Length: 453
View 1 (cartoon, rainbow, N blue to C red):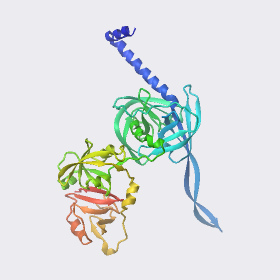
View 2 (view 1 turned 90 degrees about the vertical axis):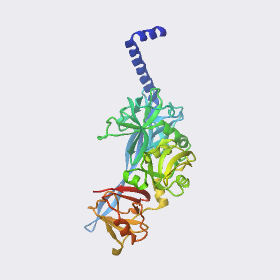
View 3 (view 1 turned 45 degrees about the horizontal axis):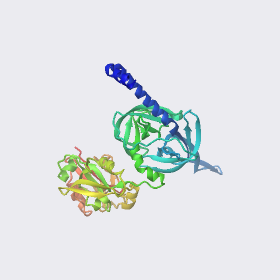
């Protein structure tokens, strides 16, 4: 019978097309059916506070006082059971700050059941949280497919509980890979972009391939209206699998770290460094004592590649290191002092911005005596191991680029060594020709090139 059908398909293309469509339909049906019992609704209660100034009356006089009110707010999202013991992966922003978490499951017949759940761990870098259902297993679960190479154009299904409705399945394709997006004040990288419809309540639900395997966890949408507008984003399962062992063990997730921050090579910076390109990114921050610093890389060096992958900005380097483990080794190709070099660097443990600021201090303006100030291009500058921006006028051509509290270390590569140097250093700089400032802002070193006609 199969032979007859094969011959028929060869000689009758319409039959072959119909058979292909039927197979594709069955694949969608099978993936959706498999996912149903393992995709859950995540319902949380968060304790919120609000400060209100209210009048208190004493002998006819109103005396305002601050009163703090506490109230509960409800939130919802979706999740995927990824282990028969009842471990659930969802988004951190769904459950962050929750005082009570409940899981709603749905069996193959559509019968729902509510379960209490506990928080196990999270990885803010991926916006991922791990929960555990408090109940007797085994539970139906889905595989995290962290091995198969995803391609733009692959069919995918998004499963979840949008707007609190019953479980919903939508379909689409992978429309882009390695997307980056700010979510809830954090920036996420390597995201899968899809046109499968996801909405409020889908956060934390799985993005599936046609085998019913989890290829991503739906995290965010890009929309001017707050509802789906054709662009949804998911954290790849391959990234989740890297940290899953730590989360299951209740350990802090450790990520590889070089201790570098890069800036793109604009023409002014490239000219000052004597670099004609193409490619590369300049080291803007090289934290003393960090792995890259110990390997000899310094601020002003130019990074060309990391493990053979071209680097042209900070994001390129971040993508090659943040999913690695401390102790992993990477090879950097870079230029220092006009000489091209190659070095292998063993990654350390990634620090947070707060940890770096705590270690290296935070620049801030101090009170100045009238004679301390040097005025240039609308800036009020004080010498304090550099030129500290004590003030900036609204009319200044530098407003919006420099900030009060910035500590300027060099101007076109020249460092002021004393208060008397400020006039000499700044007067030799011309915004018309372009100026490159090396400065410290909020404990972070950075380079700004500014040109104004």
